Image (cartoon, rainbow, N blue to C red; front, side):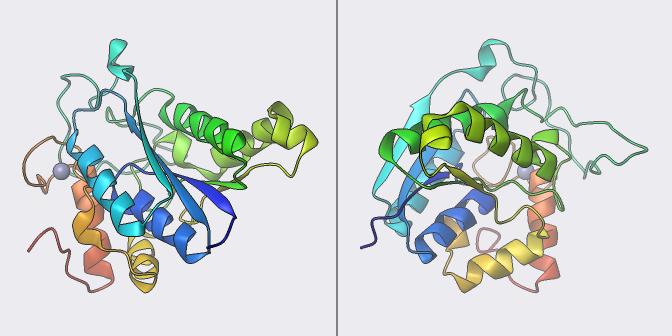
Length: 227
Ligand SMILES: [Zn+2]
């Protein structure tokens, strides 16, 4: 097995699962990191564990902390999760949906970089996407570039070593494109969980469910969790 190491931020959703399989496909020893951050969808963590096992990761850590302490999001408090697709913000409309979690990807990526630096990993994979997405500012290329700059300047690996690269391979893909790519590298999408609600089955109506459905429809595939 290769000695190249990569940390993959693994939520158990479709995008991060695709990243885990991609990292494996690229020959990395995968160190998966999941966060139990007070989200209502605890179901996600169960999916992340199944995905980590299916990928055959070297290690899977689940870090627990509570962003619900200050809330501010429908995902970490009892604010209702909206249904029906919320269009991504444009120049004209800058409304960011209530499912946005304050500072989430900045926190997640920082923790992933800390883990990567500690174990000597070259890369941190993050499944952010700025095409078929909910309009969160921390899913855009500008955010990834700015974090890369901070990592280059603010870590020992960045200053003295070979650095740590943020790998965001899904950044500019459509949801259908992500599913096509994942299918080519053997992703088992039946293991993944996308719904923002905490139910037994996906609600089919939240932004995340709608984006997932659109993706499978556009690439002409059947979503294995719908059947
Ligand atoms: Zn849903």
